[in-house]
Image 1 (cartoon, rainbow over the protein chains, first blue to last red):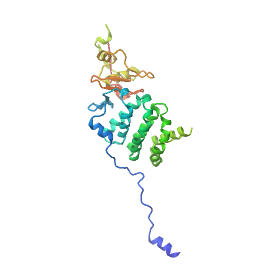
Image 2: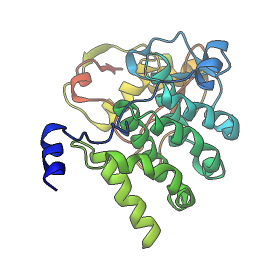
Image 3: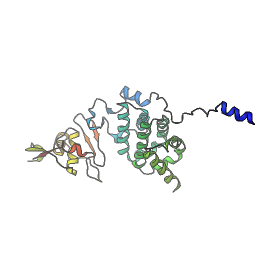
Length: 182
Length: 88
């Protein structure tokens, strides 16, 4: 017994290696960036962005939401200008003016949302959460439609929920619980 | 003579935000003086507005691209003094 006590004093036992739960993942080229650089988006790219707006070449009401909305959501992984700006503003405009065109597209938005959260980048997570907040109020029944996909969205949020300054994250988690159980 | 055909007599800068200032801000962001010039240039009778707030919802710019605006106020207090109010 004494031998083991002496062994413990002489040789310190190290803890397990860091798992890297909080570590940021490297970004991969997105479909949004590819389409943007090809000029496939119906947005005016050379426009002066002083007013923080993008100019649409086509009326949003005439857009195919099944095609474009997931592409814009794919741009949530972007962190540099102009990609991040156009993705964020494009999503905002499409959600603000989508109406009943948004609900049928929800299943196609889950993978881009999950990919964005999986990067574990604080800026991307905060922007994605703000987008989720906008998404759930953009049309009727959207919040309920997201419930089956909570198991894909919430795990990464669970990792960060105890970090300081994560107000949006906590708000979204509490909203999710409210929708699911009440 | 319709207001759309008359040039403004004077111009001053807005001092305080109001619903009218908000709409002027939106028109001027899109490159127009105000609603009268927009209707004159685009040859439309109506401007698409949010029914809840009455703010301008969508405008077509001179290059035929579209600007979309939020239901809520977009003109921040620091931008109010840049809004030009035209008097006819």
